[in-house]
Amino acid sequence: MNLLVTGGAGFIGSAFVRLVLATQPGVRVVNLDSLTYAGNLENLAAAAEHPGYRFVRGDIADQPLVESLIASEKVDAIVHFAAESHVDRSILSSKPFFDTNVLGTLSLLDAARKTKLARFVHVSTDEVYGDIDPPHEADEQFPLRASSPYSASKAGSDLLALSYVRTFGLNLSVTRASNNYGPFQFPEKLIPLMISNALEGRPLPIYGDGLQVRDWLFADDHCRGIWAVLTKGAAGEVYNIGGNCSLPNIEVVHRILAATGAPESLLTTVADRPGHDRRYALTSAKAERELGWSPVMNFEEGLRLTIDWYRANPGWVQRVKSGAYRDYYARNYGAR
Ligand code: NAD
Ligand code: TYD
Image 1: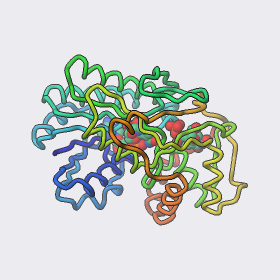
Image 2 (image 1 turned 90 degrees about the vertical axis):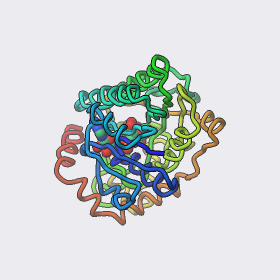
Image 3 (image 1 turned 90 degrees about the horizontal axis):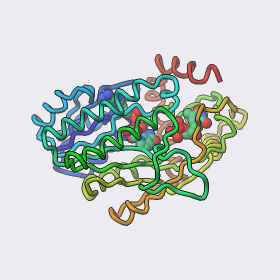
């Protein structure tokens, strides 16, 4: 099988590329990534030597490029990760989210339709369901109630992708995963930001009361779920992929403080995020039942592995936290 992976230089995309190259002999991977601030070829240093791997720098919105890659690389399936992925950045500036997440996805879908591509997996998020009152959990039929420009752009792309199944018969499935964590995650999201700040002795900024709840999924578990959807999922079906690990943010941050040995005095309450979703909760019973997938990593172990990785890779952290990151940090946190 020849795969076109989009966004393979990002956090989850690179975990997927590493997983496929390590576990699926005979599968070739072409990674199409435009290398935004979140794309980092260091994440794929090991893969770069693999004979079944090729990197192409380019924009998913460049439809002629996508079509020519599908033809020249004899692509059988697209696994589509590329996105603007961070809620806070979507609040600071929304347009790039619609350019990539909606129009970029449209370009891939049109390229897939024109070339009669055999299979397409669209990687999405549980954030499209919006916040959910306890004790409810979203299944795949739950209404889409996006709260942020990020989640609105993902909900838009989900609907667009599913419309190509109904209208054009594309063999496409959608995945909706909960919050991922693990090595190589850009330190703008909660867990890597708190770990790297704790290791550097910097303040840990908690939005509002810190009682917002997220479900935590180790990225490798997510990638195994995407592989299961790619190989066993049905056209037009949506599959939730969760970590069975719901925690309030403040609890996550306390565990990071305890595991890194950083002092509690680093905890800092800052102004809340506008439109902040209070609670995400989903059930992945369908993926468990129909695909035989379930998460295997427990949070304590996953967090320990993740902290160990950030401790062992200060050079990676320093390089991604230089330059533009400092401007982003000042813009997002300076006014709080
Ligand atoms: P990320 O921000 O780490 O990486 C995104 C990658 O996409 C980067 O390598 C970037 O260079 C690339 N990219 C962005 N715009 C592009 C464009 N126009 N053309 C080509 N490449 C482009 O994101 P992530 O956290 O790895 O998320 C990957 C996917 O998983 C996204 O679709 C996201 O919505 C989804 N998702 C993420 C999470 C999470 O917790 N991070 C949870 C559920 C779903
Ligand atoms: P984040 O990692 O941005 O993911 P998402 O908003 O997509 O769920 O944030 C996870 C939770 O952590 C969310 O409730 C916001 C909160 N948060 C903070 O309290 N402080 C921070 O500095 C960040 C980045 C997030």
